[in-house]
Image (tube, rainbow, N blue to C red):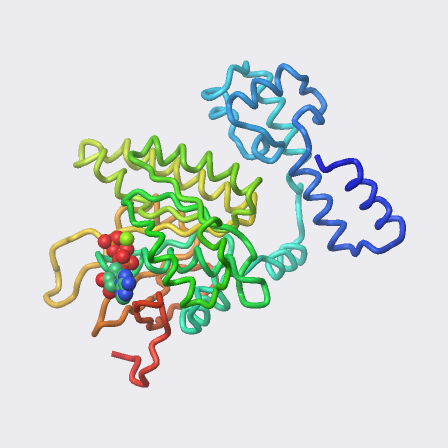
Length: 350
Ligand SMILES: Nc1ncnc2c1ncn2[C@@H]1O[C@H](COP(=O)(O)OP(=O)(O)OP(=O)(O)O)[C@@H](O)[C@H]1O
Ligand SMILES: [Mg+2]
């Protein structure tokens, strides 16, 4: 909770009528975010303590967790777990909203520039909350885009950024600070502390990757993280569960991971970007490479926006292959020392 003086200053502002409706709304949201678990009726100090020990420290986290998961990770009994999650949902989540309210909400959602006009236009103004999946073979620029977003997220809002920090779940040791410095210059981010606002988490296996999300959640709440990257989403799952015989378990685990990501995206209006490889499958029609991303339906259905990256003539073509709102289309970018840049040549159609 904020200090007493903070609270008093805000009360005063409200009384003076200096707080707009928007401010009041976000103030309400902030209060829910920061509300103590003990503030919920039916949750006493001992239940709250058990929740904290299980890593749940806010009403929002509690609201988002399914009872089954809560039972597995805490010492709570079934009745208590059910009651606690229900109370938290009542306090933290809107019950029903009209399509107009939904439209308003979407209009006010944050947009994040990619640092290139071509990609921003392709995406109708930049990335938005939800899961954006970057699919492509080796060297197509998936990681470069992720690194660039870690810099653009720090730009001020009037420059297309979110004035925020980034959390990078790195499974392949690709988070290179030297490269980030080059890209910071490329996007015109002049901030000596730019590298301090990228929080890296090196995940060594799938369990650790789940752990990364739990930690990321704390950083979203406490360190102003507005962008979460998982690069790569699927590599560890593929290595740990090889072959057909492991497919069912692998897909179940991957599904749980996607759901955790979706929950975080919708709860915190978080922009989540994941990378995914394509499988090498034999050509059925000669000359036409069949397109098959790793992770099958689980990843396909979990991702909100899917972008397919291909290298062609030294450039990267980015195509929207699945989105609830963007028309199917392509844009071209170049991978350069400065990062990901617009292709300037006129014949951008290959
Ligand atoms: N400093 C740099 N200067 C110029 N180009 C660079 C620089 N660093 C990376 N690149 C470009 O980015 C490419 C690598 O892209 P990236 O690492 O994003 O691939 P990826 O799609 O993540 O591949 P993988 O599937 O292996 O992770 C290089 O081949 C090069 O073209
Ligand atoms: Mg990569």
